[in-house]
Length: 558
Image 1: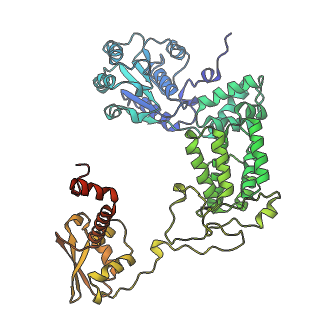
Image 2: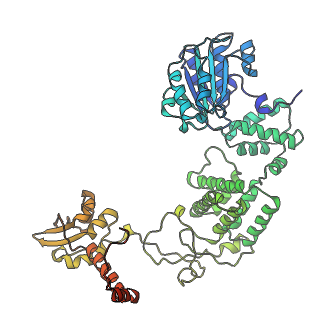
Image 3: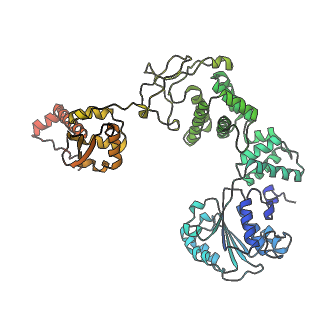
């Protein structure tokens, strides 16, 4: 007899056998039992979670010879024909191969005719998002008001590609990704049915690699049975998938944290010799750092751990909270850069180098001298810390790439156990007390530099001229070109920066066409500089002398 793959052999034949989609099963069964059947159902979700299976079981429930119920018998002629794909009133359509409007029209030509054998004529359209726009338009009217004997069952992995006009006509069910425990328990159940010896660690590995898809897990189990000659063994599956034991990822993280260059090099060479999947390595490192962070912050790994809890606890004590977050950002950057690097090995090794040589937020390279000893010698040295030459707060770590500056004597200091001085951010600057009684336009340039203004407020301040200051009222002239910035929020920011409320002063803003503002002064200075450069340019001077030429301002590009 021809071998049947596990995904087809053990496809669920009723609602009770479906794993991990209880919310959808409950809604469908209750609708059937209470005679509240919609005419169009849309099943969405990632690959291998049961969209088509649910649709076929629903078709059985509607056409079972024992009557419409939430528990089809599975043994009558109709149930057997649906199981074997031979039921004439179940029309299954692969939308990917029938995308044209003519295909859709021919499909709907027989909608008005009664079913041949069953109670309902059912159209099961898989990957419906592949339909063309014209095909969707041809389907709309029939989908909205089909004959009583017709039901539409649509399935897709990309519901965002469906027109809203289709979505609004369907009862939509979103199928969840399966958890590792759900996949693992189901695999164990099937292996016991097949009387196949298995390894618990192997089942955990298959469940993790399946990434929420039961079909992927069953396909991997088929492959594992073929590779292992009828048995499921962890070492053989790991070799087949090109993955490494999680202990190797844990050891690599320890070497990085201890600044043990020799250990890191040995581990990288071992990875190379084993021809491992570097994408999987990066994902494993990301998962390890995530679970360490959960343990550090929440004292518990939510949803079950992929790593040994004892090792996670040890690493959570060894690696600081800040280092975990920094390493995680570097690994995520490496994953994002995979599509730009020559190969996955390059991206992985560059991530390891960054984790070794750069400290969070400093942009400083560590000492190049490798540590040949264990954690004791490595921990006696602190990583170098760059001195802050600016008081401006740094951007978030996820948007930074660590860089070194070999030309600056301040960029790297000698490694030592010392505490870096706290950086002062813009918001931490003390506000300068300004004598508003003597404030005039000549003093405005100096005052402007001390104001803590950003964005539109700063632009408004650049386009102001103080035209009067008396009776505790300061009147500003605002350039018409800056009228867009003259809003209540910007005005209030200037009031707060000048502390006018504390000084019992008021500010008035008046629009004028000509204003001697800081912006105007800067533009004037720039124009004078350009004019001076043109006058000293020998080429321009020669042209003016030979051809009696004149320079026309602001004509370039007209």
